[in-house]
Image 1: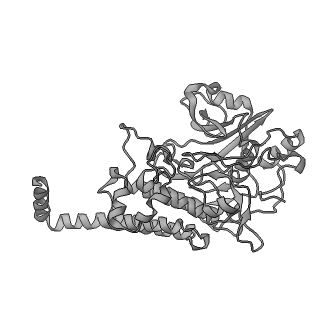
Image 2: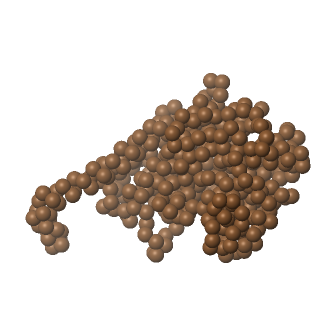
Image 3: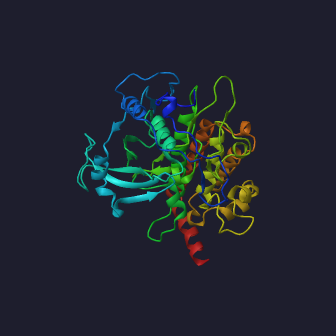
Length: 411
């Protein structure tokens, strides 16, 4: 039996890989993928629809239990099954003005649905949703669509994007998610728009904490879930900049039977993937921790993990900045200049040291995501304490503060 929540498909209906993995040229945001056929039997479709909608009893083999008060795992997916007509109506016929984005899976459109019934609604009424439509020529294809339903259909946590339902009609494969109005962390960090304020230091730490909580939830179980593709573009933000992890197409169940890792084809995104995984195909729970360390560097520097437009020797962010992370003066030189003055040197060096720990070459030497979360919360507390100290000084010695300000103006 494969590493999946339960056998939603009979063996004859499970798509097989159509090609072996070949490493593509290094490029920013490039994703290594395997091609899959999106053709399955009608019997497989029927069985999948019944189990995913929770209308029949599914096997409990591989069922997970997470000891988290802020999340839960369902025995079976609890999703609404949409018709393609519903999808087309909700997304206004998939017109260009409803397009939110595009990736390896296909295109994502915004749509509108009734909040209670999740039936299509007029544009601007009800709730907005995100509808992901599989490209028939997608190299990621059916198996990743199935993985999304298997995982997100059963995982429930404030820091995971909520999957509302799916559509499988003829060759049409779609997924319906809650809408995340602030978009991805990637857009905020790297797409410079003079009309949009850059994320503040406090907001960046808040986002890092939210994403860490999501990963810790996945890892904190007897049978852990390895996310496998942690990167800035997969961290989405709600209206209050709360982070939610999205896109579970490459997720795997963790090792069992006393094993330290699972062996699988190398898939993911270069620049974020852990070195042991790229070299051997051995996937550890702490392979996700490496990816988190890369994203934490991106949050601090506002520079992409891989960028061929940077000078030679600087294109791989981790290789370039690692030597600077233990030096306060050099660290300041790589921090995002747009947030200068918003953080204390102590907070910055602690964040840098945490990133270094996550980026250890030996996965055993990396912290757990629970430990990462605790460290980030301590870093966040430094900022709160710093603000309180400044307020106290301001109230206790206003004359001194005024004098300092005058000297600063003269300089």
